[in-house]
Image 1 (cartoon, one colour):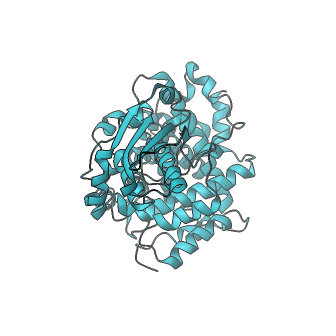
Image 2 (tube, helix red, strand yellow):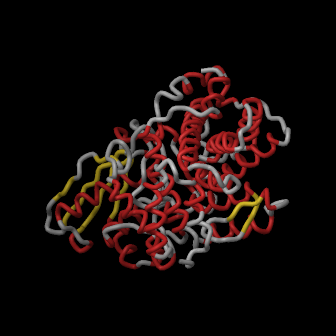
Image 3 (cartoon, one colour):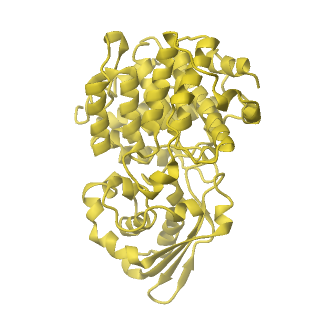
Length: 446
């Protein structure tokens, strides 16, 4: 596929399957729920304050509201703040072949750019979102196929942000080419496994991806030039772009049931099935043995001291699942980090890499769990795949339940109104601004 064909897909109105548009609406609202739930986390507060102090707009035409906060920053600043906020509550969507996440960067950028488009229809906003998912996914796969290091999502979702902003601001193919080149060149080529080994507020780099992508749009608009993006135009990545507009990867994204690294989910679901099938409580368990893929086996071990460590955990997550029957934001922050009942379970858990699970990554995430019951029974899950994606999808009712659980201190009325927008966004007369109106006020305001 030529650059001109890619640019036409990105910039021109196109026919998008209803399934893809409906999925975009679901992913959008799910991601915003995570953003609301993350508002009180320390990295979220720091990012918002930083955006207000150091990323101020030059004038009203350059400003965007910090969602669930009410203050204003520049368009790149608002994109950065919300992307960092969402990135630090690890419950947002992802796409297996990318080994990372798209919505946590492109959703904040959509909201920031759209604030200056009062007449933008919800449908046009969703089509732009679909397009940005499709470009991000291919940029990710192209990057992973051509470099030796495993880079964070910000390294490639910056290109999806750039394409989204270029489309919304009606840029031409030449300007888009510069925007993509700037976004790729300045995107954070940060090392994912470094963050896995030492979990911090840096998380998956998507705050910087959103910042870089949004800046790239505005710089290209002003005439700044960037070299063509290698992950888009290099001859050796052409195969990754050949099905653009045919294979709608957005429909293959997963939605997370838990605010925990996706790598832990297969084992969590396997244990959950055993808990339900055998009515297990912590006192029933003598030992838990987990077989999983190499990346999951490398997640943080022990009792976490920080929310970042808790979200990049496996043993801690399994213990929390056993004790509480679920995992919500409250279990990976605050008092949840000092939960003695969870700490007591951790020594019972053994995690081992299994080659048969490792070879399936990244296209799938498999694990199996065996529980040794105190009465001597051995309870085995068999191989289990993480729920929430095409292999084991969540129902819309389950996604709604998750949204209400994740969206934190929002009032029940506000939660209901935002969730109801998922269906309203699909109506041809709905403005995207109708959704934004529900998102600007700080958490705690009805």
